[in-house]
Image 1 (tube, helix red, strand yellow):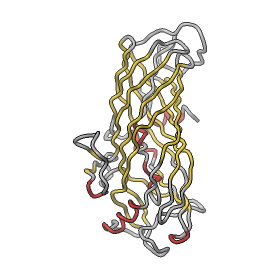
Image 2 (spheres, helix red, strand yellow):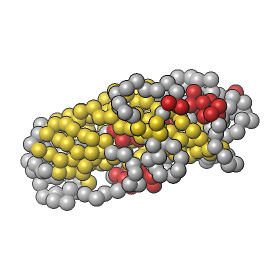
Image 3 (cartoon, one colour):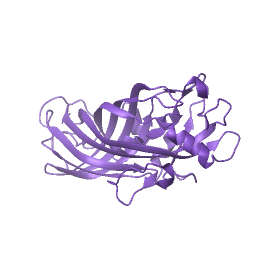
Image 4 (spheres, one colour):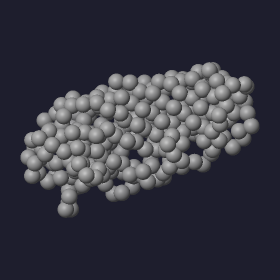
Length: 297
């Protein structure tokens, strides 16, 4: 999210939406609750629900309006998985994200900016799911988990998900996944003390955006090991992490025009993922995204 791309996420919900780790019930854990098992034999099960937390160390370059820097991006997902021997299949849903704080340059005001995607949108029925597939060597501690690269689209549709990422925001086929009537996924700026809404032009007195409409495409692979019957951890390999800002709303009312959208999009923070890890905790069936996030508090 340069000025705005901190929002990428979500995509990153991005990524968010990407990740999938595996859970299977341990011995005696008929409800799938997270347990503290650290040894012994774990029963193989046919299904599991996993809460996943991905922590990525990211960096971003200078733009005309944003100071380059580095920070951490955190993403949560919920995976509903089926186990057939050593094969895994199922789906993964995004459950939230937190984005690093971005510092704008003096020419555009010299403020801190941090777009926030509201927590309540992640449990909406219109949010996308990603197909998951992989293998597991077993269900005891030390068993390996390998999840194949999966593509997650947040706020857009693509006829070919492997096609080149559009250079221009105007070429995006937007989808209103959060159902608020605006294209893509809506994020709102952090306006606490020291923070500011992103400007829509180069000068400090340019109108500011009260909301940013974002889209993202991410491709993530997971390689992990079971720490117990109901937990796992490992490496998240991010193959792609693309985004655009496709529109915005203005403070005081009205929508951004094409020039204002182009300014924000051209100054979005293009994250480079330096490294990423994930943790999985098994949860009962029917858990909400709020439960997923709470599992890692």
